[in-house]
Image (cartoon, rainbow, N blue to C red; front, side):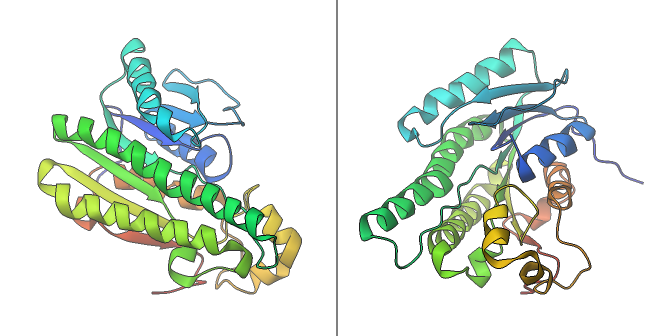
Length: 252
């Protein structure tokens, strides 16, 4: 019999304020991990002796090294174990219809790629140096079914950003594995979060339900429970893999 016990490690999680990120906080704490939870506008709504929170706008890419240093200061101040996991969940999904004025359309693309790809990769770069020094660390990237299946015309940028994210995850897995570093990705399908409500408002809940193979739409916890497993060491020989959590709506 084996268990998932993350009590000897600290995990940094981005985008923890709501939806899948908020569910990941619960899953990590349930597994015994210490958690540094990043948020932007929506703070974590409870306290826990193993939880620290930190607000930061990931659009401020130039400040990401300072954000990482602030995370290290929190870890040391609260005498947490070393940071051994980075979960990159923070993302934006901006609608950019094809008939949108060109300038607005371009702005939506640039902001989506800035947050979902460049900011995530910049933080991973900082954390990777720390992982390499301790010769231990695991990344979990929260990608999307859209990276493989594509998305509706107004969410081209979101689909493209999640595809790019997978390229970074796989590169880390291939070229840093012998340094004790692993990298995984999760690709959720439609998940019942605040971010998804715009899609439901536009297309209707029946559209979503008819697209999946299961009885119920995926909930944030259905995705979150994979994260402690991937960080536990039990899945290390799947490094570089992307795990689909999409209720059978897209099978590769």
